[in-house]
Amino acid sequence: MFKLDKPCTLQQRTDFIHEYEQIQGLIIQETPEALIALDKEIEEPTLVDIRASKLDENEAMYIKNRYDSTFTLTIQGKICEFKTDIETQLDLLTAYAITSSGYIYGGYLTKNEVELNLKLEDVITILAKFVQVSNVGPIWLTYKQLINSADNIETLKNLNIDYKLNV
Image (cartoon, rainbow, N blue to C red):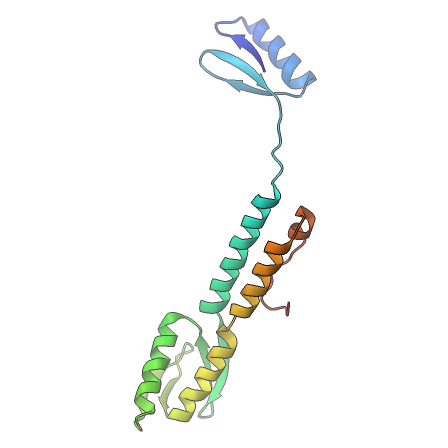
């Protein structure tokens, strides 16, 4: 570390910056008391840093695919869209409770605003597809194991977390 105390002349300041920033390639930091030339230390991410980042990415992909996916089914001859969010999950559980008691769950509105009067077989069909689409736990676990078992930075950098692929 090199330092030029203030006050200094314009020429001293110019010479200091020229020598340490332009010739030696150091970083100049200015404080109220001085100009300071610091070594350029580029911190390369460590294996631990990249692993933590990949684990965070995997968690974000899990949440997105678990709670923010959509699917389409034909129910009662109508093309219907459903989302794997909590609201839909709760609605379907309510519909299941009602229809399994022999009643029709009337006025159910899909994500594309198709109104249905659901029977038990409709609810079971929707729930089966819901489970198929939202069951990304095994994919999450596979990626978690791949991330935690990686023994070098390149392997982690090259790991593409894509829940649409079979891993």
